[in-house]
Length: 390
Image (cartoon, rainbow, N blue to C red):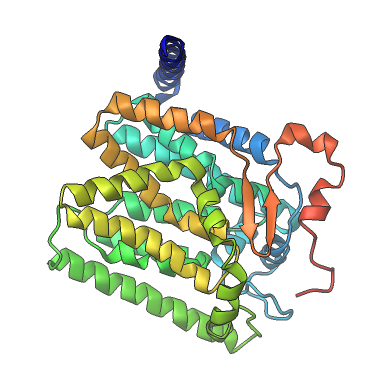
């Protein structure tokens, strides 16, 4: 028993030393480059570490092929393209001359900006350097970054960045609605963020002018999305139409039934601790609004599983629950407790195998250093669409 206590104390001192080292590095970067500059440097570092952990593909894969093709002529309907309605990132890629195979760099840039934004936002909210970097690290070592690195060409990071700022700017309804609208035009899955977009923050009344304005603006953006999809459908065959999704609900639920618990876990792995803590703590304190908000975030992400079967990727939409849960943990415990807990989970997560769960397949994200031992790795796991496929 004494040896166990000593071992625990030793691990605690090691973690404390690591936390102090992280704080010193962040402080030096902020002193040299400013808070925004340090955020960009640290975001790039986290993106690089995530790449080592997940092995990025250097060519578009699966639907990434379709996005890359769309970036070459985003408003042309000469060829059928299944992702024609998801126009935002391909249009930006076209404008920035990141077209074709070079398009894969653009989602990675948005992933970098997302990680930098998380750090900068929490520093602006007076979180310490270690806690802010811990929260950004949890985002980096999750499906939010692993998947777009591994599945090059997917446009999810653009939506993630836009929805993060919707989460961060809850007191700016006009700007928030604009960002939400852009996210909808990037990928229709942003619709499933509506529950937490519409639910007022903890300190706001359920019925107020701001709530009504938020509802009206979100309804306007959803209406514009459906008008856009209808217009595109009148000019080209759209594979991912409203009818396509509605007609496959029962089949999709049958596909994901056995593997969805693993898929939900793999989205954020150990980092689910924070929303679980926040949910039970809110209910124990009889604070029903935070508990309802947390349930709305996770429930909205889970609702996607009726229409798509890449479970762990889709559950990435629940990332605000991880961040809000960590915020509550800091409030209820202390910032030093958040620092130690967040970094303990980040370091332990390296030991937890990472998978992309898309029933009936479970695909491993192998670390970069393991790739030389797996020569069949890339094409065997991520087969390319045939050249003639739409």
